[in-house]
Length: 177
Image (cartoon, rainbow, N blue to C red; front, side, top):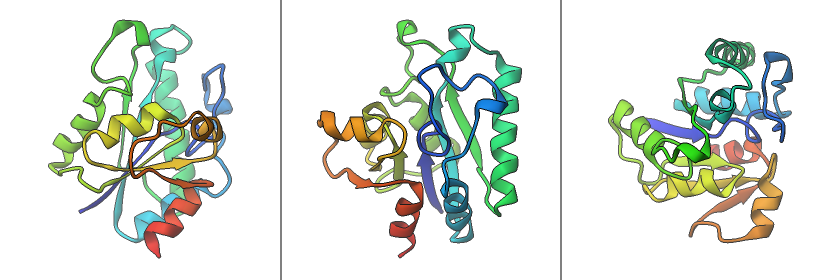
């Protein structure tokens, strides 16, 4: 099985410092949904791993998060793609949970659910915490320069072997070449 792990905000859709709190605020980055469709057509299972502390902060509830993800799933399907599953952490950083990236609990859950080792599995993010959570488990980190990606690259300290691409579409082009 071919698996790819994607962060959501800043990779698939535009990010916001005020959080994505409604389905109306969820807007795909140009080319991201098409990239997911191309990956699916090449037999990749696409999963999303996303911190969603807006729930823990009381900015939105599970029904709103489900509506946001429903919009994402439908938009993806319209392009011929499919997101197999969405894994999320609803906690704030202060709760010190194991599932919030940069910790790896959510990523370990993905490996367990799919019964797959993560060695070399592509993992795409726009922040250092996305890359750290997956790289420590052997996944191949890809930094996209959308979202917070440019600032992340400028700060440095990327996990060893991180590959940098302009956006998710360029990552898909690389993987499918």
